[in-house]
Length: 338
Ligand code: NAD
Ligand code: UDP
Image 1 (cartoon, rainbow, N blue to C red):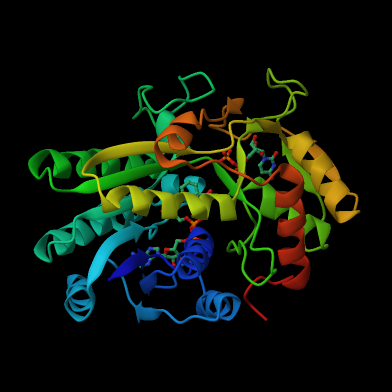
Image 2 (tube, protein in one colour):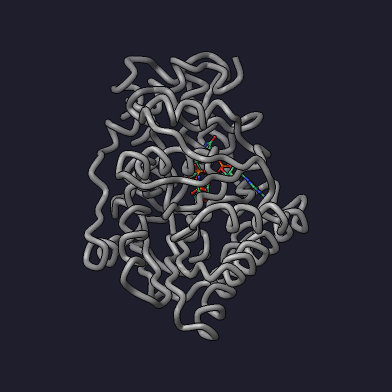
């Protein structure tokens, strides 16, 4: 019995593969490397000393999925594969719906055909939109996403819920991630965005090593303790462990289960910069800039449902996140590109 991991070479996928292999699971992986590199998979095997079975390919290709399910006994699927850049999703929305929504449909059809009915899906806090107050709870209204990326996640949540409604033997976990940062403590795998990073932590780490000249502080007039945006940063290794708990839950339950994966604590941009400076011993040059369009002031989770039902909670603190992000970037200034 094995777990199929889609998008296994990506940032969260690679860290989850480490946790799965360390937990004794066999992995079958698929990735089309549209936003990742073979090196990440090699490093996962180096960290764990274990092998996984890898299929290079696209989840929208039903033939390769058919091959995977025919050649392996897949017990459950963890589905990371997708496009994730909010800004880009506004420029090429059809690509986002095609990759994320259509890709998930092709995957679910293959699962149905091969009678595999356990699925853990990477959703996002972005499904809560801008109208709910933090701390965000799973029972709050969702769907008013502000961009095609967020809408694609919401649509997939709906599709998966409908799938369960017509076939109650499915077990599905919808995991709503908050802001994953950090890296494996070995410094061998980490986040490696294409081009100039849009997200805060890779922007900080690339500024720290001199790849970028300064950190733009995008909005200093929010209604928060220091005027900058507040988010719920969570260590990617903690997030990865949440997937193991979700797989364990689905081993003996059917239904659709939705969980926030966050720490429950919000930190501002300046809080993160200060923590990073402490962890790295470096000064980050900052420049105040206008708000980023579409941003909300505050977003953090109530993670108590995941603790109650999965026995999961984040263990690592902001200092760990900063130290691990810095180690990864310092050891790999160009990410996976040498
Ligand atoms: P990532 O881009 O690093 O990983 C996604 C992986 O999927 C990449 O390796 C990419 O090559 C692969 N992929 C994309 N489309 C594919 C396709 N059609 N077929 C096969 N492989 C494909 O992103 P990540 O940060 O690891 O995110 C993983 C998942 O979590 C995504 O679905 C993302 O939307 C979701 N998510 C991420 C965050 C975040 O801040 N990183 C937050 C919330 C949700
Ligand atoms: N941010 C910033 N400068 C940057 C990138 C982000 O000030 O170069 C701010 C952003 O406005 C938000 C916070 O950092 O308040 C987190 O942004 P990120 O894109 O990492 O996460 P998201 O907003 O998608 O939750």
